[in-house]
Length: 342
Image 1: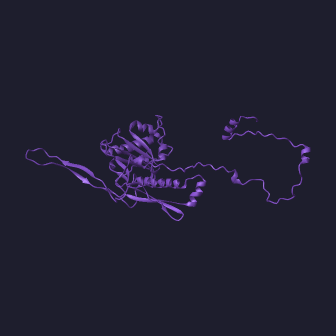
Image 2: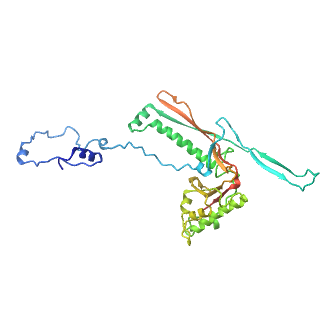
Image 3: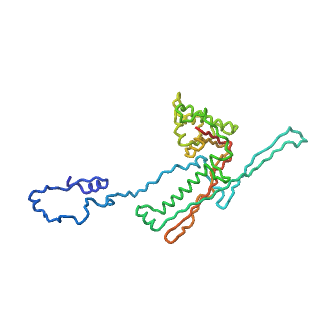
């Protein structure tokens, strides 16, 4: 293809389209005879028919981040907040309960009394840290790959700290009065699925799964003694495994278990968290919030992030980062129900 428009040619080249515009002429016998035939009989270099491989290597500057599972602790709890600061070793809370009794009325009687009872439960926050380190030559070599090595290590600290914090939101900190969404000792005992049948069983259709969800909600409503109704705001947390099985349809109504449950409990919110796939088994966690505006629970921290000065050595540098967690604060255990073994 010849005489192609120059601008069009450039545009095509940018997207990898090329047209050969060279003309080739076959060598005639007269031309062949005129070619010099005085090349040396043996090579002085190693035989070679290629070029260095790095010259044909295209290095894509785009950095592809590795995928990590989502951090859903705050979503399951419904709220994340700060409690205290990093100087405190104990976080204390006020719990107030009304008490009282009545007696038959009499003008001259002082029987019957009403008062309040207080408790002061506490939690122990946990501070933790991580460090990054880089060298002058290391950073310079990484720059050849178009990677800002220092910035990427700083991003890594955020990932490390936040992932540990999310883990404590689910499981607390061993050895401290610091509990998580799944292991607070005040949590009511978990109930099993109906008939002990796992959702992955071929005979477990959408109706069976809906019945398990309804049984979980019934457990919550019954224990709350009227505080929770089918119209209450609820959060149903489940693993990715369970989130796929609630899509199973019922045999007769041709609707999914999820759709049927939302029809009966219109204010339910679904949250998927990998941590619900526990050692004890697949777990469902249903939480309701009372109408008085007080939270049932929240996850908390006493330090979201503290960075420390960059410390220089002879030809390398270090920097420390710190964070703190208070775990999950379960204020009203009666408003949480669990099912294990689905």
